[in-house]
Length: 146
Image (tube, rainbow, N blue to C red; front, side, top):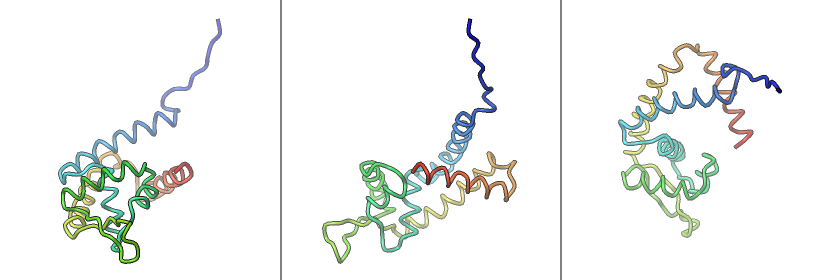
């Protein structure tokens, strides 16, 4: 009989990342739900508010590592809520840019504050330097696999 050595779950990075992601997603989604948003909608709204001249849906899809068809649905939902608008740029009438409304940026600010506050629970054991290192490591993983 062959014996396979297995590692405990506490040593399995995939499991740990998945569990941590699940906890963060739960508290973040709960905070964003108070503003009628989900994480992906909030992500689109953040990018739109940070780009006053607007972004194309393709640019949003690239930055969020999503399929463009997913971004179309997210923008549809945000537009229906009055948080973004699609506008034609002067230079190319065939393209539509996603531009945040004033209300969209107000909601983004409030939702962001609530999401940050909610993250204090799962991240309470990490100091500022550890949070910065974690952010850097996760960004490196995300951009390398993007």
